[in-house]
Length: 427
Image (cartoon, rainbow, N blue to C red):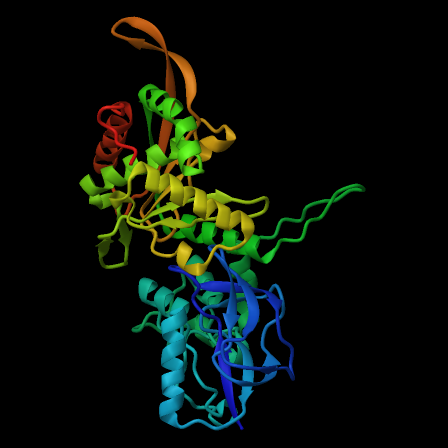
């Protein structure tokens, strides 16, 4: 009998950890390859993790509602027949391709105390970004493994062990440094409670959202700018078409589809905003894939409209409807969340007129489309009632400066204000 390890897969671009929301197996259960083992939640998607092996579940390495970094072991499986090294290598390769995360065999770990250290992709990424010498860090994970949280604590403390420096932290016990770092990074407020107060447990997906938002605000220097847009022509065109469109197509022609199309068009002219920070370089993405925020009662999902610049307003409207339906029915898949390069958030759907969005890491910007409001404005020295909307842009100031962002917003404004029956095809 050989022992195999299943690890936390990467269930989306930029996802570094996942939460076991529900185990679908227990120790002693027999599973076949591709049987679902657990339901996992991230800030981007809910998904089932299938088994890469056929055998008996030996041990569950994590509890329900426990969060693990990508690459950490979630369970062990005793396989029914021994495999050759070539067969195991092929198994691992197939699993890595499927989940973009390492899945390796348990190579008699207990008998190899001096084995070479293994690090999760999240740990390696953080160490490279901050120049941390991992050999000088003492981990607090299972069997002394270094976790992403260990490195985040070091980054916050400012006491980073470098390759050419001695490290007092690496020689200290985890419990000696954790209290000091915790006071700086994640103080837990002592909230007084009284009779009638309701305590609501934080769910795994809410923890994942909180973690991703904290990461974005911690790592990205946010800046913010806004333009006011006269959307009267767009409103008139959409209102004239909406009834016939709904009857013909079976779904709504929304204002939001016009805004997403305008953003996608402007991104082709200002590709700087379709970029990502990558430490020593900025990656300007070729594809224009627009992430859209879709909220449920207790969570926020960000599915992606792929190649939005190549789609018509009708095509974008259809994808918005389909993705929103998948979110609300719980059928959103990991691939629906991957590949986003720029986010457009329809904050106007709940009445907001001005807001500052948190950037969808690792993208460089997010645009908030606010509520369209009828207001009196001055046109040619005369007062007229127009349909006005604010467009609010949050930007990563490492990647973008005010000049290019101002020009980008001015172009989006121009596209929206020039919408008409004659120059704006819906199909």
